[in-house]
Image (cartoon, rainbow, N blue to C red; front, side):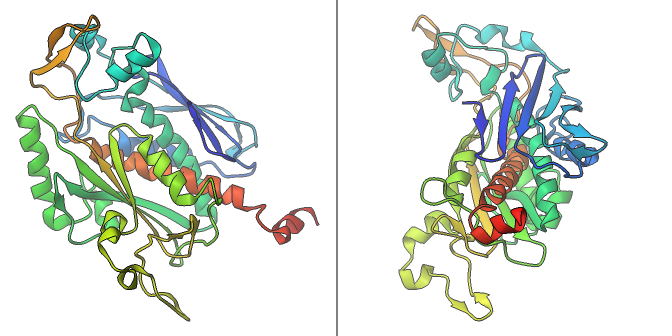
Amino acid sequence: MNTFGERLKITTFGESHGNSIGCIIDGLPAGLRIDEGLIESEVDRRRGGKNRYSTKRREADIVEILSGIFEGMSTGAPIGLLIRNKDIKSKDYENIKSIFRPGHADWSYYQKYGFRDYRGGGRSSARESVARVAAGAIAKMLLKEIGIVCESGIYAIGGLKAQKINFDEAKQSEIFTLDKGIEEDQKMLIMKAKKSHDSIGGVALLRARHQKGGMLMGLGEPLYHKLDGAIGAAMMGLNGVKAVEIGDGVESSKFLGSQNNDLMDEEGFLSNHSGGILGGISSGGEICVKVHFKPTPSIFLEQKTIDVNGKNSICMLKGRHDPCIAVRGSVVCESMLALILADMILLNMGARMENVKKIYN
């Protein structure tokens, strides 16, 4: 499937080394002011080639708006966005066109379809995520109208975890680290892996909140489209993601109920172990999500593999790859969270008769 969302649907298209990447956004209400500068700035945050901690592939990532916007406003029609691929070096992949790269989707795509686009992974490449970030920028415009902010940063690199969380500092960091006190150590871990022709994993932390504090309540569609379920599915659908935690996540399995419950008084919740979601519905606390990325499978070391005929072979990669996909991946996760929340907000409009009456009376 290439489409996600229930009310706000996003369909992406394109391959890593194809002509372009793009998306169709369907279901966005008419009358939303579209900030093209925000779209470009969000895509630029994700863009590689800007520093030594990301891929050297230097795509301009200029977003072309094809439809659905007139005089700076959404019209209610599907919005088409196109990003042309300019910095393609397909020849770097000639030596692996008949073998399977360890840790990549080459093997599974080949078993499903009987052939694969070996040029950078084709459709399975993280290059596709640029379309999600462009769409996520528009979702953020909708969220801004009702005071919701989505933020992200790097919580951990190779097991080195943040002790302090500061989303504002993450915006100024080359690797989006949340704890300035360990930024240099995290950078050293990335560079050590890169110089060893290897890669390293990391964890992104996401937060969604209302500008006045907390978060809107009632978002989520039980039983089969819960907010945390939608978040988990969307994040796990990103390349390289191997685990997603809501709130305390796996740590909650170590607690007693008396320790894990979020107690309440007349002022609200006294803690947020649940990550702002109870019963699959936003409870009013900030939504907190950790997304765990595996090490980039594209490494420049000899690795044992097999070819399309099932014979033993050696994989020795060329090309340009991120030493830590979690860094740029954090931006993509933030965009996905914005898209999910925008979708849930539109879905929630019909949850009560009083809301329906407000529209039609």
